[in-house]
Image 1 (cartoon, helix red, strand yellow):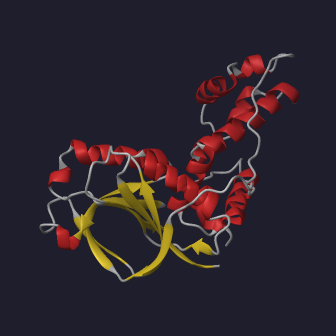
Image 2 (tube, rainbow, N blue to C red):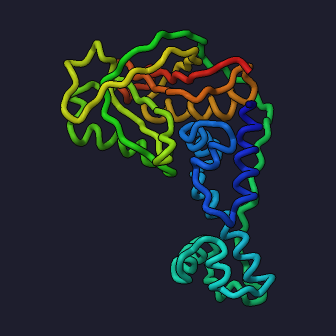
Image 3 (tube, one colour):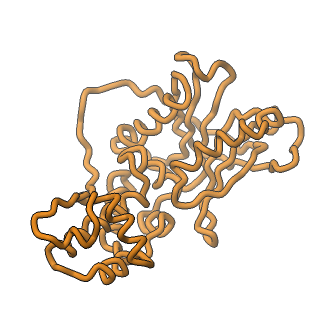
Length: 278
């Protein structure tokens, strides 16, 4: 499915189910995309997690109902998924800068976060250095962790933990691999590690993964970490995918980190994304 069509399908689902229990896994399943790609692509394109976007949309509609329809605060709180009036009031006040009770008064200013729609906007051309490569299956030794609906924020923290716990001395972190979603837990696993042939066995707390054979779009990133790789992810989702003759496939993707000074403006890394022709 076309990337722009996929994102708009996800946004339609969110808008049509704002009064329901919305999770990233449900949205991803509806839009026929991996949970990880949806969360990451959405975050890099909007600067918001999906949870934040859903909350903003719900609080926008809640403000309208309180100010225009004069609805009861407790009814609106329950309607938009808040278990107590207190939790609703806290979230509402943080978003609108007024309490739910104040929102019912005439002339009170409220904030509005409008529904998003994804469109392609052609701007000045710039070069993206990438190649298409077929790679056979290979094995990696990794430290794994499961992530849910806030992976766009939690995965960078996992990298901090990896270094803080001294795990880089056990397995050099040359790869960051995003796995597929577990259909039971509705989470996906992200791992940090290195190629099996470069590791000295499998240390305690680590495990072996086999990355299947795929056709990959490989993007070369030049610059200090983490800005260079984050900027490239944003360009992949915002510039390359909307116009490429390829589409994402539900499999592993990974970031490859070369040896060198990660703070150098000349540092080189790569993003490997599994693709197929549309």
